[in-house]
Length: 376
Image (cartoon, rainbow, N blue to C red; front, side):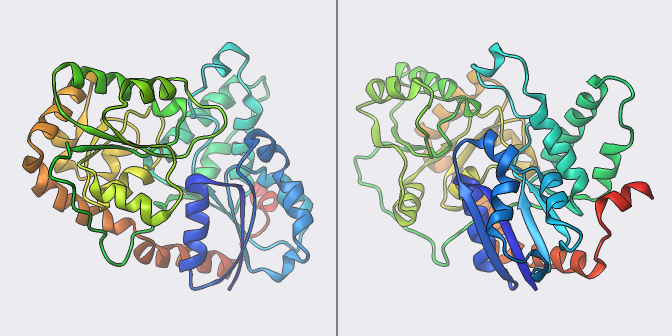
């Protein structure tokens, strides 16, 4: 089967997902991408850019697109010969928390509407977690209620009828990476998230300050992707924790990045937005003990029996759990082994068969164009 994969924001987890699926799928996948910048422009204009890149859309059996694109525009302009389209939601602009700058201005509701019309136009909709699917549903219903009368009815229910959860695949090495720490090393804390406001880095560094005040020894690896603009707290932290920092900044080489994960003792998240958590899953697979907020997708992707040990409800509880783990690193080793085995299910080698089957079933059905379906 010939699959056209369209990624309007080719960077970070979007890039990992696109290249991972392309490499592992049994289908003939053609990947077309746009740079990971100007995301609002991508949502509004990616359809036009992609259509200029595609010579004969009818030559493909299926289109796989991700959320930073106006799918309704794309399908309308692609014409009646277009194949079925699957839309994958990494994130959505309905439930995504506003940045400090955006809170000072009127909400940009048209981006949320693009997500709604895109999901309605697609033939199949996939979400990267159940948490994400429910968050989308809640916020979509809320936005539609804010519309002036006459309001559209039944839109969200139609989307839900063709939606399902599919966790993203992760790239794990065939052989585990093993790195022996130096005898003098303090336990290494891993931060491997995007340098963005929604990951709440100020909370993370405040917790580290409280640990240092308590005399708890630790070393620090601050990795993750960063853009030209990032929270100023990172620059302050570079000075504040200069004695603890082992690496500070994006680690571009995959092998080098995985080596730091393998050296890590604990991975911490303080995020207020996370629809799946690839960075956490990767760190856990390499043996890091996770300490995660009891919210977002984390309770879903981590075994419930381990929630009391790895999930926290408050900043103070995070300080307590992290201090205990750093002072007693061997205490968490049995859980580390169990969690390492648990996250193997998210590898591309296991998940790709499910993705391929979804695409094959949709292509066989040759679902009618969305406009016709809406009339039925």
